[in-house]
Image (cartoon, rainbow, N blue to C red):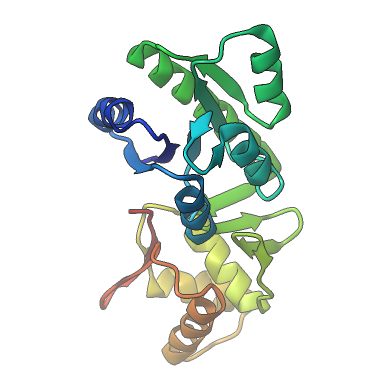
Length: 224
């Protein structure tokens, strides 16, 4: 399920958008202030961000700039009553990927969201970027990040995470992990090695909610 954040000060509009998108199997979390939105983003990144221009404690344009300074590729749509050319240009200059003028048709908004998510998915696949929750793994660099913090991992920890990220949504058995991470080099290891390595990996990743243990079987990367 794709998770969306929506920064919107109008509770009625926010509720309509949230209810419609949730019927399409999106998980939508609404925030009514810029401060609350920033706090949520620093804790966990969504798949896409919707931002209203007029917020009680700041502007959507400023929020977009703040987001872009930290997450260059987070899909971002500005929703606003401002429809003049200079406003649209300002919105894109602030970092928005798309610009939707109120009032808008919910079906059209959903189509724009789907198109932007497809494009973002293709770009990440081409670049070898894997995500789950607030974790980002860049295969080309062999680098792992939690939000903006790069996490140094040992070779077994990195390979363990890579396998789980590539199989996101599927349970990988302990036997499969032992074989792929260790036995592929002809090295026999005790089953406890996996347990210890997983414990260290969880600690380094700040105990992510998306890394789940399937008791007596294996592990799975899965967003809520």
